[in-house]
Amino acid sequence: MKKIRIILVSIVLILCSSFLFACTPAMERFSHLISELRDNVFVAENEKFSVSIITGAREEPFILNGFATGTKPFTLITIVPKNGGTDFYYSVVINGDTFEGKFVPHPFDVSLSAEVDVLSNDSVIQLTVIQGENREELTANSVLTEQMINSTKAIDIAYNRLKGSLEDFKQGGELQCEIFVRLIKNPIDNQGGYFWYVAFVGTNQTIFAVVIEPTTMTILAVRE
Image (cartoon, rainbow, N blue to C red; front, side, top):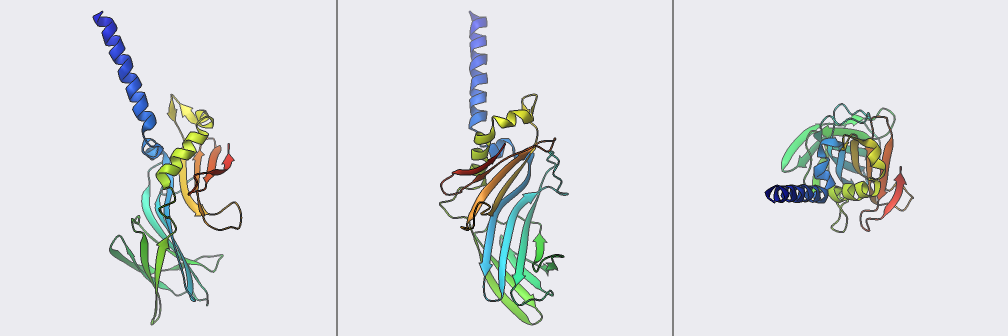
C-alpha cells in the first residue's frame, strides 16, 4: 500500500511539473534559444530627417546557423537626411543616460546609423542630430500601443501554431534551434503598420515562421 502511495505521489508530481512547464511563457522556456529580439521600434520625422530606432538584443557575431550563443543588448539608430549630407553626430537619451557619437553612412543607401550597447525600456526616445553648428531635436515615439501584444505574447502564439512542425527540431525531447523575434514593418501589403515576425531556425537551416498582426493576434502568414 505504501509503495502504491509513493508511486501515485510521484505521478502527481510529474504531471504537476509538466503542467507548470506548459503554462510557462515560451519566452521564458526558450530564452536560451533566442538569437535576436527586436523588442521595440521608435520613429520620428520632421522636414529634415526621418528616424527609426530599433532596440533589443542579439547574438554577436550574428550567424544564422541554428545555434544560439547568447545575446547582448543594442539600440540601433537610423536617420535619413532629406537634404543630403553625411557628416552627422548624435546625442541620445536612453533609460535616462546620454550617449553621443557619430553616424556612419550606409555604403549603398542614403541612410546613416549608429549603435549603442543598451536595450531601451523607454516609450519615448529623445534624439539630437548635430551637423556643425546646427542641432535638430527629435522625439521618437514607440510604435507599440496598449492594444498591441508584446514580444512575450508573440512567441507564445508562434510556438503554439508551429509546435507540430517544431517536433522536427527536438533532440532528446528538447528543442534544438535558434529563435528570432522581430517587430517589423508590414511585410504583407502597403497598408503600413508593424507586425511581429517569429522564426525558429534549425541546425539544418530549415525555418518555421509566422507573421502576427499585433492587435488582433491573427496569424497572417506561416512558413513551415
